[in-house]
Length: 331
Ligand code: COA
Image 1 (cartoon, helix red, strand yellow):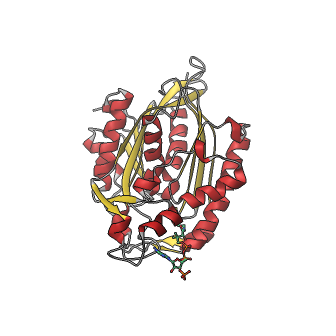
Image 2 (cartoon, rainbow, N blue to C red):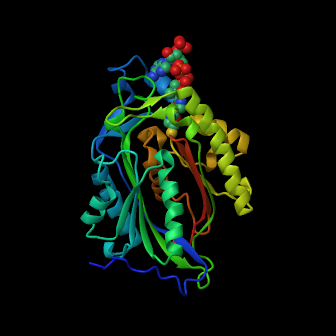
């Protein structure tokens, strides 16, 4: 076991650092809840849900730590590293196993680690927040960070509610974020720009009391989501000095296809350049972007040197955009 206790950050000799997404992994529980299954609980139809949201089915069951671990093990294998090389675990989740403690330490323990491990609660933007935080920790001398987005939203979703019951499901996605030395490897991966934001004025449009299920003002969430996506994507593009045409693939939070379509119209983004897994996962909050990333890699949609844009948005409200140049390790 590595001694992480109070180790001083190694900042000397790092130079300009970059980061590779060295390995990605995903996990979905086995149990499928289809739109047709929901018609037995609420007055709805497969056609209505698909037309209004783009969702066909979602997964339920499992635990946040269990799904995290499965995704993390796949990410570790894909990166070709040993778990003991991980310096830090960041677990973005809004549905931890316990109210106390966080879920990240248990996941780290199962991986044989005693490194720093904490949960990050930024709702559906959480995994992108985690990526930006990890980038900062790489700048402090860390070399490999496990960034997970994992949710078991079934425990806080009322599937007899017509508004929220049709949307949410469980899943996890994980990435091994690895420091590169841009001085030595100018073609390594790099976070080109990011934008993190929040507006607590909108706490009550999507929230859950302790021990209770989610309550949502769907129309207002829809409206605010479209507004913040447009804003945040443009800020990140401007900061990177890029335009829409420079982006090879956009991976948005998988909430509702109509939110994506409405935001894209104004931004001039194309759905052809967008990675979506929403139809078979539903909204998995912090897990949704790494799940879509895993799927995009599996389908060969990311090549070395590509520029990928992650856009998260959700309860809080929070939002997070990160523009990432893929290193030489893609397909
Ligand atoms: N099935 C069938 N009909 C439904 C329904 C359902 N599940 N839910 C509502 N309806 C009906 C209503 O009864 C209403 O009928 P009426 O016009 O005859 O009165 C009509 O559909 C419109 O209802 P409304 O509540 O205004 O629905 P909506 O158009 O706002 O769609 C959502 C509901 C939830 C799909 C939509 O608001 C949404 O997707 N919002 C964003 C939610 C989100 O993405 N949250 C997570 C963000 S991270």
